[in-house]
Image 1 (cartoon, rainbow, N blue to C red):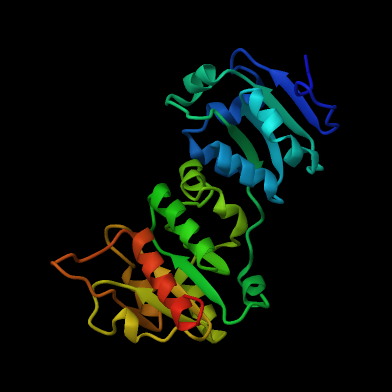
Image 2: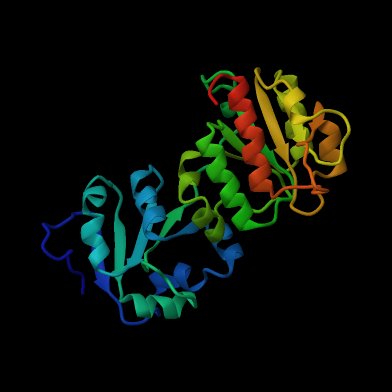
Length: 283
């Protein structure tokens, strides 16, 4: 039986249903949180945590359902009133929600939403913001590292994120959580050939700079980021693949001490992005 949030006037587009187990067909996306390929095929993702779900409600992404303790409906009421789509909210105690996820949850707040349509490269190149700043990812497999990098991209004003064919999706549950919901503010370009996309950017006068620790070409401080630029970042273990590296204009390294030869990709991305904004007078 559906009910409305306690001590609140009805919300026409919100349908609230208490649950005592997770067998309802509508809850299937929550039951399959560990099988991300199913979500990918359905074009959906799971948002986890109070702040992440709050940022989802503040975004223009289409939300399908919520699964949370009833008290959070009152907390989100103002944001829910602004939504114009039909949302099904399933309420359950946090202890029950933890049996679904298999791990302890601080707030017990989950939501399912549709992955937005990817931005095209042409759309990104037509953005009015100048100079442009893109980040491209090659062979990035850690969802947590990707989410942290997304957070850095939004913090430093990246216009769009290019996700290569060998990288995981920024809409994996752990990536969304690690981004703290900032992924909802970042246009994403999905490419099935990152090397070709980089060459396309270069044809449009976007300088493509590889963050590559195993190079003697140039240090970060010597690189010029004042014009349109795309930073290319590689995997945690092997870095940028040779064919993607070859497609870039140049490779740049961060000079490090004490025989440290590489940084976590999120950390390296933050260092590069700060230098870009410093050179552009925004640091």
